[in-house]
Amino acid sequence: MKKHLYIGLATTALTVFGLLSSSQANEELRSRSSQLVDGSDNQSQLTTASKVGERQTPVTSSPSRAIAKIHNHDLSGRDAATVYLRGIPVLTFVGNLTTTTNSVKVANLTGVTQQSTTSNLSETAQQATTLAARLNQLHQKGFDANLIQVRWQPEEKAYLIYADKEHLLTLGDHTILPQANQDSQENALRITNLIRRQLGNAPALTAVTGAENNTTTVAVGPIRMQMTGVASWYGPGFHGNRTANGERFDQYAMTAAHRTLPFGTRVRVTNLSNGRSVVVRINDRGPFSPGRSLDLSKGAASAIGMIGAGVGTVRMDILE
Image (tube, rainbow, N blue to C red; front, side, top):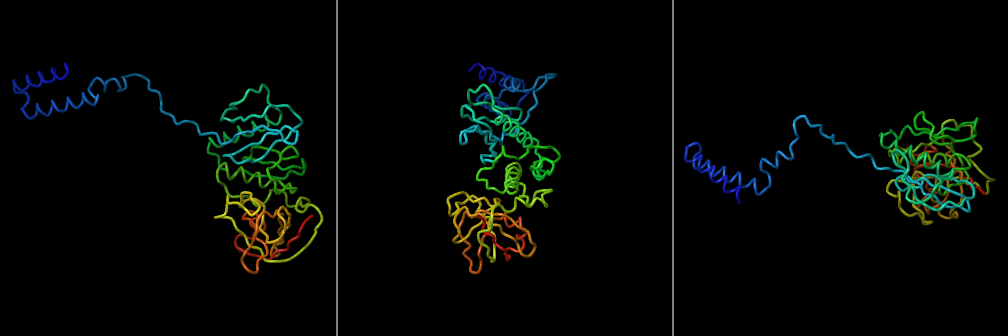
């Protein structure tokens, strides 16, 4: 109220002495009154303004949200730690018998935020934590997921996953993939492609570097039946939908649809136009187009070079 009175008196005085016209005085009064109502007078502006010579705190963006998480659990009486990327299980480290309490740990950009009261990390949890923390760091730096590669090392007789030239992970008996099969080369590809996709939506790899001569993992077990037919493939538009056996369809996994083969049947599919083979697992029904015997996932079709053609004549070895 006093501010209004002082402003009015000052404006009136200026008008009397001829320094302001009547219209200017009215406009000034309206302007100052509006500033007082809005709380935007000179005093408040001085309060929010930067002081001369005062160091200002720079505005920085918050760190990228962690995409990797770890779940410690028991797997058939053995200690296990599963690494999740954006909520998708990528692989599980399996160790020895343990009494570690189940818990969930979030791998931050610089370490681990522990959400339970466990005093010591098991060896499997340490391995999972190291991997998850490094993946989070790569995510923060905007790492090109196309540089995630997998190689077969004959000296170690193991598959190694790299981030460009940096070794990330060695796949062996202590690492397993959810819904894994007995084809270790396929499993190595699936783990690598999961990391590539979740880290930066990079396209799936179709082959393991250095594994051209590692043919012992292509077919496991004797051939129960052999047939020839026309195969097609499907993927986009179906990814994430339920398959006929109830699981989520992953277009990058090595799976296929068949009209009658039991779910879980493993089939080695060979593209007769180029001789390339892949082992798939039957988890869906189809194809429903006349003249076709098998519907491969996009990942399986890529592995045998059938994406461009769309369809091709294949040999199907039904494995025991």
